[in-house]
Length: 161
Image (cartoon, rainbow, N blue to C red; front, side, top):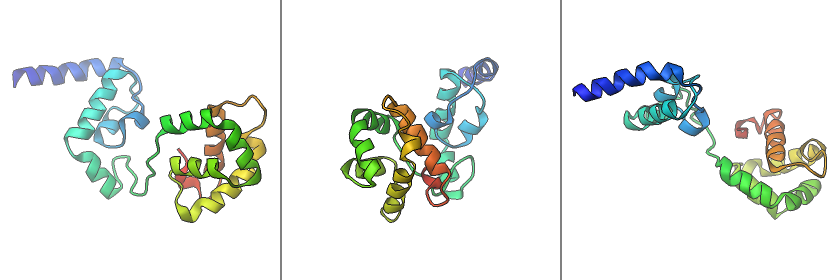
């Protein structure tokens, strides 16, 4: 018990010297809120541990509190980045015509629901010049421009990162 108290005291003393915990890597919940604005591995571990062990993340998701959203979209940024980087030419081609297998996979990876797919494809086609402004665009640039397109669209904003 004494060791736990010492560990908690040390955590509280050291944490202010760390900087900014990334919410997208720790998820929502009390831990993410407590360690908001902190950066580094130590506050991230504390945030994840708090979120995972106390059950508050589940409460936050079901109640829409603690920085959690009830209708949030789960999206793997690593898978999205790898797919986009490996298929950027096919994505550009399909986006220019507003349909294609590469856009279907992109929509899957971004969590776009079936009812919103056609609108998503049309929005991408309409913003092709902003998403692919040059031939040397990177996967990160493409994903960022797609997210910007989603943020500006009333129907698709809920899918933005």
